[in-house]
Image (tube, rainbow, N blue to C red):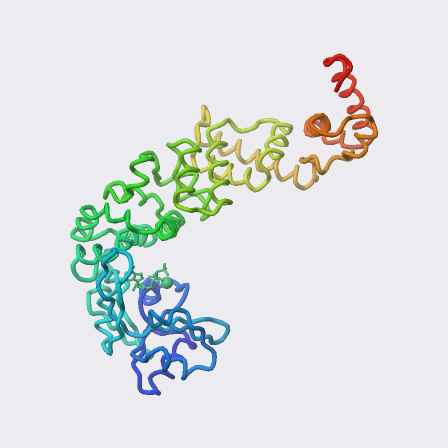
Amino acid sequence: MRLPETVRDILNKLETAGFQAYAVGGCVRDSILGKEPDDWDLTTDARPEEVKALFPRTVDTGLQHGTVTVLLGGEGYEVTTYRIDGSYSDGRHPDSICFTPSLAEDLKRRDFTINAMAVSERGELVDLFGGQEDLARGCIRCVGDPYARFREDALRMLRAVRFAAQLNFEIEAETFKALTELSSNLARVSKERILAELTKLLLSNHPEKLELLYVAGLAPEMAAHFPGVHLDSRAARLPRCKALRFAAAGERITPEALGKLLTELKSDRATRDRAVLLLTAVHKPLPESETEVRRYLSDIGHDAFTELLLLKEAGYGSEETTGGVEQRTERIAKLRALRQEIAERGDCLEIRGLALGGAELLALGIPKGPALGACLRALLNAVLEEPARNEKTYLYAHAAAWLEAQKKENGGAV
Ligand code: ATP
Ligand code: MG
C-alpha cells in the first residue's frame, strides 16, 4: 500500500530520528478498501515531547493520551504514542493509560480487527489479528475477547453496528453474542457519544442496519420509550442529511416522541427542529395547486419543502398513491418545478416581502398590536393566492376593506 507523500514525510522523519512509526487504524482500513481516508492517524514509540521536538508546527491535542497533531502542508496529522489502556472501571474511559515501546500492545487495545492494522512508510502492512481477512470477508470482529472489550468500553458495541452500516459488513457471531448480552451497558455511555455514533450510522450507506440495535437490544433508551424507531432500505435513497434521516427513522413514532428522543440525546436544536417538522409534514398530504405550494413554502420554507419532497420520493408518508410509484414520481416532479418557478419569480412568501409595511397600515388607522399582525397576515394570504396583488394600490384597498369588515364584526372597534 502506498501512503500519501506528507504521511510518508512524517513517518520518515520519525524513523530517521530512530523511532518506529506507522499509519494506523481507520486510514489503513479505508485504504485497503480503496476508499480515500478522511484523515490519517499515525502511531509511534516516540513520546509526545519527542514528536514535538521533531516538527516545527504541532498542536497539543491530547497530551494525556499521548496525542500531538503535526501540521504539515495545510493538514493536521494526529501522532499518538504507542499506549496500553489501563482498566476501565466505569465502562467508558480507561482509568489510566501508559506508554509502551511495543506496536503489538498498541494494536491490541484497538476495537476491531479491521481497525487494528498499521502500515509503515515503505508500505509494509502489520496485521496481527487477521484484519485483512476480516475486511475481505466483510466481518466486524473484536480484537481479543469481545466480552472483555465491550465491558471495558460499551461504546464499542455501538461502533460495531456503525461500522457494519458504513461498510455493509456482518458482525461476527461471537462479537454479536457478546454485544447482545452486554447491551444494557450502553446506558453508561454519554448521550453525546451515543448521538455521534448514531448519526454516523444514519448517514451511512446502509442506515437500515439501525435494526441491528433492536435485534441486539442495544438501544435501551430508544427501545424502551420509542419502540417505533426503525429504518428500512428506503432510508438509503435519502441524501446524507441528518434531519432527513432522523425524520425517516421516526416514521413510526409521533413527531413529539422524535423531538423528545433527540432532546434526550442532546441533539443540536436545528437538526431536531427540522426532523420534527419533516416528520409532521410527511404524514400530511402534499399541496396540489400553485397557491397551495406558495402557502406551504410560506409555512416551512424552500429548504424544508425540498427535503420533504425527497422524503416523499423515497416512499415515506401516507401519500394516497392510487397510481403507484410512477404517479407519485410525476406529482413530485411537478411540485419541484412549481417550487422552482416560485423561487425564480421571487413570489412574496413572507410578511417582510409585502409591498405595504406596518407603518403604512398604522397610518390607515389600524391599531398597533394583534390587529396589525392580523391585517398583515390577511394581506400575505391575499398575495399568496395571487402574487400580482403585491403592490401598494391593491394592498391599501385590501387593508381598508379588512378594517371595515373588522369594525362591522366588532361593533365599531378593532
Ligand atoms: P472514522 O474516523 O471513519 O469514524 P476510525 O476507525 O478512524 O473511523 P476513530 O474513532 O477515528 O475511528 O478512531 C481511530 C482508531 O482508534 C480506530 O480505527 C481504532 O483503531 C481506535 N479506536 C477508536 N475508538 C476506539 C474505542 N472506543 N476502543 C478501541 N479502539 C478505538
Ligand atoms: Mg478516524
